Picture (cartoon, one colour):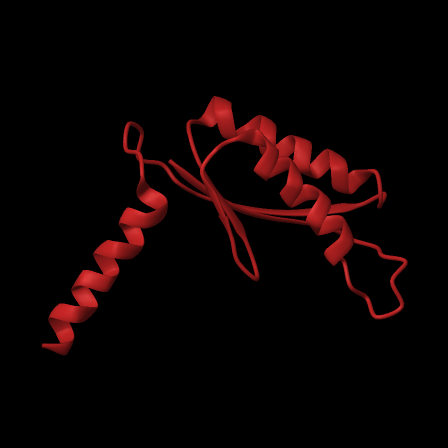
Amino acid sequence: MLFAFSVAPATTDSEDGSVSAVVAEAIKVVRDSGLPHRTDSMFTTIEGEWDEVMPVVKAACDVVARHSPRVSLVLKADLRPGLTGQLDAKVQRVQDRLRELES
């Protein structure tokens, strides 16, 4: 199963409004989990089962909550139990389809 999430503080002390320092702390929680993951400009996607991923998401939120009294969490999931390697496989399937369309 894939879980894409974005967590950020609702407030920041940064003059330019950046939340990158706090977000980096949340992403470190994900990296330290050992679960397969990928981070892009808007979301971090983690692959695993419910009981593996949800504690990581909560821990990331807890880290952000140390910096802000209000935390924003967006969570999206692709629930296909039993499949693994989908971080890459889903992208590969779309790439294959695009090549078919271009031929």
